[in-house]
Image (cartoon, rainbow, N blue to C red):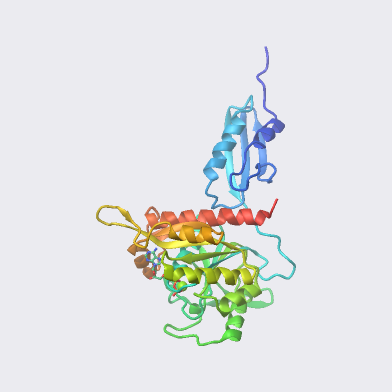
Length: 358
Ligand SMILES: Nc1ncnc2c1ncn2[C@@H]1O[C@H](COP(=O)(O)OP(=O)(O)OP(=O)(O)O)[C@@H](O)[C@H]1O
Ligand SMILES: [Mg+2]
């Protein structure tokens, strides 16, 4: 009697070489994402390693892997295990933060547009996906993030790491966090000038024990001042995300912020439109009080991507004040869904940038 045909590992690998990573634009075998293939009779188990756990298309990759392997004669069942190992661009010797894979700065030209809100929710959303995330509040004059994370009364402790005494970041909502606000008493004000700001930022990078991180999100103060320039000179920033509201008054500041990042050699990943739309609490109709599509036009005009559009919703603000980021307080609401989508987009684009050209 003829034996039923058994698939070989090579045949499975050939089938997997047909599966493209939709974002990276290459097949998953060439990208080194296939970690293992086990063929046990007619059952196949494939382990695929994504470049970020926040990959927005992971269900597509899973589906494509299943279909490709099932098409191999002799395969009856497929188990796909998706893991992730976050990529980094090549590090240079002596760089600060050697154990941090990506530094993502969230900036804006204008104050009050929602940088801190976007930075906090972006960081928490990445952590919710399973990434190791830190959040540095680099707004030395107006640190607002401790409150947004419920850490307004948090105090810093030191830890001994080898022969160094370092400051331990605080932990909240699955991420590590540090802020000038943790070193100040409530209501204290920082009145420093350039060199002292530079020293403070240096300390945040050198004297805080960040450990192994996939993403360090940095919330920048508004404008194009000393803190931004210091940060860019002290550590290679993987990407900057620029937040704006859809009003003309903010647009000139966006251009200035983008220019500053270009001058300081920080790659700008794109713009985020905050307070883009408003859903009527009575009837659910979506309104665009400042006009629809204007930030997209602005982004296209300066050759940048629009990474996300976050609606205006009073719950974003009230939960922020209570110390519970909206992606945790109301994960199924429109603002949280938009912020979670933004996190996926940022993570995926960072993976593409890390792959480099070619
Ligand atoms: N999408 C939103 N819907 C409702 N309220 C929002 C939204 N985004 C931000 N806010 C609120 O707007 C206020 C300003 O936001 P936030 O502090 O994040 O801005 P910022 O750009 O960091 O400000 P600053 O320039 O002072 O650092 C906060 O009260 C915040 O809760
Ligand atoms: Mg802020």
